[in-house]
Image 1 (cartoon, rainbow, N blue to C red):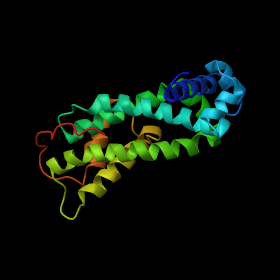
Image 2: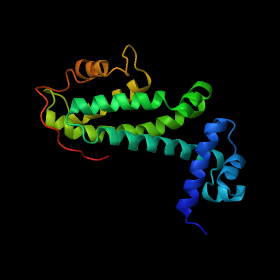
Image 3: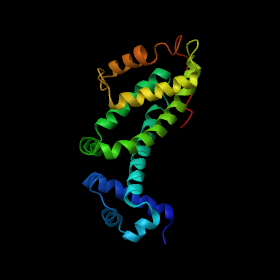
Image 4: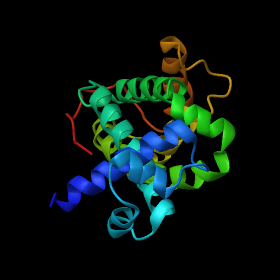
Amino acid sequence: MPPVADVRQRLVVAAYACVARHGMGKTTVEDIGREAGVSRATVYRYFPGGRDELLQAAVAHGVAEFAVRLYEQIQDAPSLEQVMERGILFAHRAIVEHEVLQRIMETEPELLLPQLTVEGNQVRAAVAAFLLPYLRAHGVASGVDDAEAADFLARMIMSYMTSPGRWDLDDPAQVSELVRAELLAGIVVGPEPSAPGPSGW
């Protein structure tokens, strides 16, 4: 009998494939079991919550993959500004080019958004933790709490990923202006020092 983790992972990957093919609303437990090559009873053995639990796991799987790719983009950034610029450029591009996400956002946002909110909060917390040593190395303005500033910046990064407003987030020059003139203004002071080094997630 295969290890529990292997079967669970196979079912999560199968659920993601079914969502990509059918959408969230039309994906069934039977579809997922068939895709994974297991019986309906096996699906429920590993996911007692059935379809809803599997869809949550599929969304979590997609978000986790995104978080790993984001970390790869920013882990060796030499400065706070570079961390934010690289992160925004990558995240915006990844979301725009994600065919499955775009299709579901267009057709079934009411099913996807609650799941993304839960997973997005975890990514935001990880981004804030990553930014914190950069903020401390840079120095924050008088009266600014560095942990609160890191959380604020993480929230803003997540917000701009999906709602860029007047900014063209495909243009590195505009992203640089957004970071320096809008996001960091009033939060940091002085010239950018050397990077503190990657802190991990």
